[in-house]
Image (cartoon, rainbow, N blue to C red; front, side):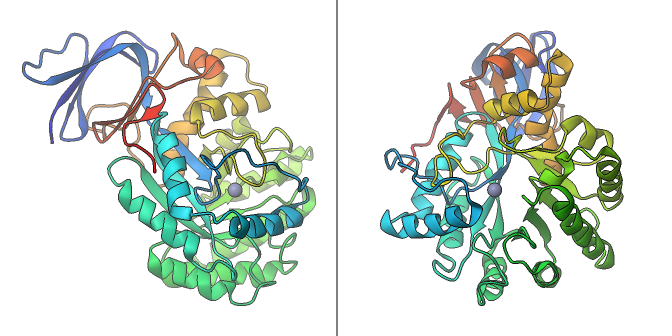
Length: 397
Ligand SMILES: [Zn+2]
């Protein structure tokens, strides 16, 4: 693999330096590196950070490039789920093409790793899984994609879904997903026993959507913890949203966080402005791994989210009432190294010897980059330039 010298960047917003990349890894970080004959990129004084990590999204849902979606469905979860299935049919939605558009938009704007939930249901079967698997192959070397087989329409209320989840895992999905065991399936034992059984048989982890608020969510969380403990799945389970951790009963939340830490259950957040969400500071202080994501982008659910992890860091910082530069930088950390830790990418740091997965951000400090936003100046995956000025180098279909 060819070498590359990036001149004039500031690692994590610090003093100016150059980065020499060899064999897809960071070979040296130092001022004025002398590397004759090596290709050079001018960093223009940008801040270098480890590549951004989109750790909770839905690549199979976006309507990017298909015109404005006029949403008439409102905010009821069940109605939104039914509406999406119907609209996918009506719009002749192509999960491969759409996931390519979404993933490349992320890759062009600083993202090097994506965890995507992908719908599995008895109506569309495995079409979305197959489409995103194709995208994962097409984008190998550009962005790493982890796939969660996700029973969006429910599991116990739709017989046949469990078999489809099982087949999705055999096809190449990385994790088993789940969804509100009480709120959607109204059968928490059945739902959780089923997804833990599939995960155990395939030797894979779990990432479960838990929107259930307050005490109901806490109850589901305890059932998840029981099974994690009983099956010896410590470190292999993540809970997305975990809105119940945002409830005001702090002694209750503190005990839940301690139990999650004891089983190394990770938390993924979107910092949703419309909901109570887990506090970044409290989750990290409890010793949990924590990542963030934009959730679905330009889909039938809402028009708000953008394929932009720097923007997500801003939303997360605002939602957490972060004001100091150190706190705002912490939000960015969750959108990068934090998400990588949840995805099992342990060496996602700006250090010599680590993979050259980088984002070069505009701004003079990390907090300024978050506050003022992109576009990300340059994105590199394994030492290859994958994005410039917010646009992917590879053209989307
Ligand atoms: Zn989601």
